[in-house]
Amino acid sequence: MTASPRNHSNAQWVARIAIMASLALIFSYIEAIIPYNPGVPGIKLGIANAVTIIALYKFSARDALAVSVIRILLAGLLFNGLFGMLYSLAGALLSLICMIILKKTKAFSIIGVSMAGAVFHNLGQLLIAAALIGDIRIFFYFPVLLFSGIVAGIAIGIAATLMLRILK
Amino acid sequence: MKQYIKKADIVLLILLIVVGVISTVFVMQSRSTGNTVIIESDGNLYGKYSLYEDREITVKSGNKRQNINVVIIDNNEVVVKESSCKNQVCVRHGAISRKGESIICLPNRLVVRIEGEGGGYDSITS
Image (cartoon, rainbow over all chains, first blue to last red):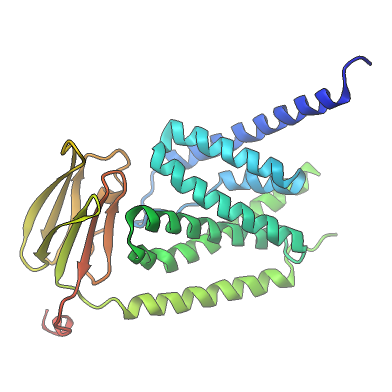
């Protein structure tokens, strides 16, 4: 009775974000220990993004942003290093902005939103790499990253759809 | 029962594939065989080398010369054999041999790229 409902919901929010961020961090870790080398840096599944999508659909854009920023900072400190962090942040922010806009249109399913998110994630990483290197020619990687983004985005979108079905 | 795939998804997929195909064609066209290996370190030109002469180049960069990359030109292909960086992305990168291709080591700020200066007949003669 005495506890204010505002505090209660704040604590709930912190707990929820913490749980989702840790889950995403574990996915980042699993991704980091999978030993495979496609020859081009940047091709990966992005399992952690499934958590971001779930946060976006089940809760809010604010939650999705919090989860992905916390996850990237922690993953950066633990395994990716400062450069990895910069890369991931650029990719994740562009991707999230794109996903929020597409979700707002209500025309796309989770799979479509996830696909666009993955493609823009790779685009964001290419942009930051071009800025850091100061060489636009890095965009030679664009086609292969675009196609890998489409495939990864669809796969993660399907996974997120199935998970959200269970969570309902 | 909710629809899992919507029309807009398909449109988006087709759009992305079209962009992908166009950019692939664009990249392929601009990629003819190269003949010069250009190494840039810390944003400056470090050296130019012929792609057809096998050699090993040790690039030391950073303000204390602490960042080391070993670039190998062998059999008309270029690889980064060793790097002092943490992520080793440049070392795991495949060999490059065509114009426009590059290997980049972000932590050491190293760019190895191939350019073609003159001569478009290498693909026939080699």
